[in-house]
Length: 263
Length: 263
Image (cartoon, rainbow over all chains, first blue to last red; front, side, top):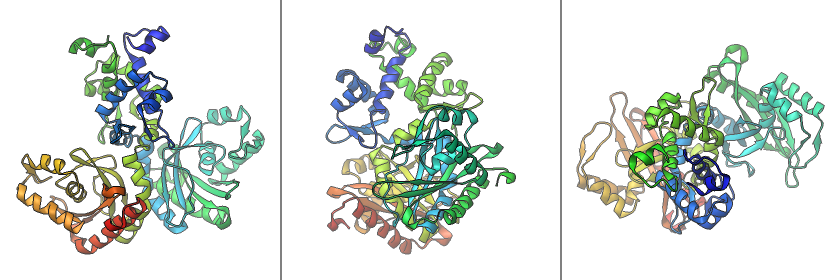
């Protein structure tokens, strides 16, 4: 019987709690914690060190984790091998990448590819021209649906239930934390749907950033993701960029088999 | 007690076999099997359907797997989120990508970034120009160390033990399955080390491909990966490409903090 099964009084026969514990070890890693000692792993996952070590060793054996020369743990290549099979991420990415390259070349900026995962946007690809100003969005990272260009484009074309769930609670802009009135957000989403283009201005202490994003359609009129460009406000010409982003989104959609009526 | 613990007579107390079984579900997916029914999952993982479903549901709850409208399983975005934290894959990739873009632009071909994982090369990034001839290497895929450009470059700069392990058994070229004499391979590796460049010609029924690859160094003179170009033989000018590939590898190495003496 596992410790957690004993504690929670759960039926231990199938041993699933131990699977959850193993997965919780994977979940302790993030962009700021790519390498963890056993003690850190144990503390962050809230699993006693002895169990954490046992579980981590299973994950190391399989290749989901790796250990460095100092014995610290990090995410392993085997996980990358499996993760690249995710149809929603890498299938889309394979088709989109050459088009994204073109967009990065002509704009000299950051180009993003994102999909919706529940109530968040997830960046599945990012290309950056050498000249592009540094930004801290990373692949695999999550973004709010209501405070980014790619997020707004995803939200505008998401099922009605998703939009209503988001609108059912107060929505605050990020990072400046201002309340966004529900009717304002509704109007924004209607605009994005009509224009097939989301333009979002992110005001920041350091530099204001404009993101411009357009939906990518697959078969059956389903939005599979969005492609967007991120530019510093001082160089941004959102409408001009919009044409390039929409052209890119149409190219990807056509490759993905979107009906001509959607293009 | 889990079925496998009972069968194998293993101590069930810690419940790790169930972790192995959960991981074996993840391992059933590959490039030809990105979506699997429960029956396929169960058969491929050699786990009874009832246990397979229970374990798969844990993985779905966490996001490692997802189910489509037809109830079939596929790899989930959450796994991509965690996998992108792998320092050996995505850390390198983030630095390499703008340089790889440049190389794809000037060559109009496929550009690869690979790392060594045990006795194989693993592709962590691939960029393809629109005009590039289709090839079937995919990101997350594995390649032989001795029968690809990126593989030879990785092997040449791998620890002596890795080279000797590979050379201790007969080595056959892929895909044409000819025996490669150990002394020939040794000479090739010495050439690659001296020139900092691997050139490999892959003869194929359909089209012969040339791959040209160069090592990427990090701090402490360690080879972190290799960058390469893949071109059809009819358009290949390997030496000319070699200069571009070496230039790209040096750019990435400098960004990674390689000592100037290594550049």
